[in-house]
Image (cartoon, rainbow, N blue to C red):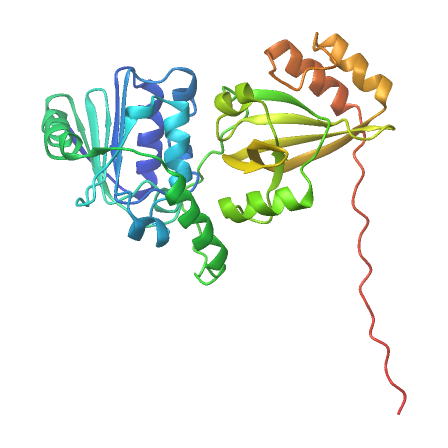
Amino acid sequence: MTRVLNNTELYETILQHSLSAKEILWVCSPALGSGAHKVFSQEILKNPPADIRFIFPVNDFAVKGGEVDPYEIQYFMEHFKGFSVKSHENFHSNIYIFDDSAVITSATLTEAAFESSIEAGVLLEGSDAEAAKSFFTQSLWNASKPMGDLKKYKLMWNLAQKTTKKGALKKVKPHTEIKDWTNAYINAWYIGVSNWLSKKSKRKVMKETNWQTNLSIVGDVGYHFFSQIKLGDYAYIADLTKRSKIGIEFIQINDKARVETDEGDLHCAYKKEKTYTLERKQFFELLKTMSINAKTSETILNEAQLQQVAGVLSSIKRKRRPKCKPRVKALRKK
């Protein structure tokens, strides 16, 4: 069976087929945008198909030009098997294969392609999809190279993002709304910080990683946390450095890197989502309720612990930033 898909049908087709796929999820695209994993159903994190394969052109030109985001590659490699991503530098095909179905389309694996570009595609099902599967395996997958260390490409990407001028492109009204992924099926951590990185160490980490200045850093993390944390994971960071109240930040992990400093070598970059303040007694009572030792520095929270911490924090009124009064320049008297 063959069916033509217009731009508004493409996203729903990819979403529904990735939701129902059990055995195969194969994708090749000459472009990979930031947040592109949201084009698929989030269910693939909980129940991933048995055979997941991605092919992208990972090279200096594609990364520097903003065509391929190495952080999306890292996301796929961490949340699925490490060998699920390969690089091929000489193809221009957009193929999405799910079990016995295949979509051949003009839409690259970017949110913009599925959300606002005028795209078209063809859905092949049953025996009609076998030719696409054979082409993917023989002409692309078997000729692709295993993905190596992404450190070089992440440095390139971060530097390019710093120098790229924002807002140059005219915004296009989207014809399709890409559903945002939730916290479901993503690990959430508790992190207790007794010492923050010094400015000197932080500068060194930022310089060697090219991390964006809008990211915060938690440094000298434990090896267990560093090896187990995945891009997109959430965490509650408790600031234990003050003697009075305990500040808690709800954050999302953006990256991790090994950089040698006098204060430890394993570091993570994150974005703050929300900030709370607890009385010390209330904070340690919360840890006791969650069966977390006060000396524990990091641990994955289970469902019951997440409900407990969310219940306590939801009862706290977060401070709003005061509105800045506009500055008025004084007029010189003539």
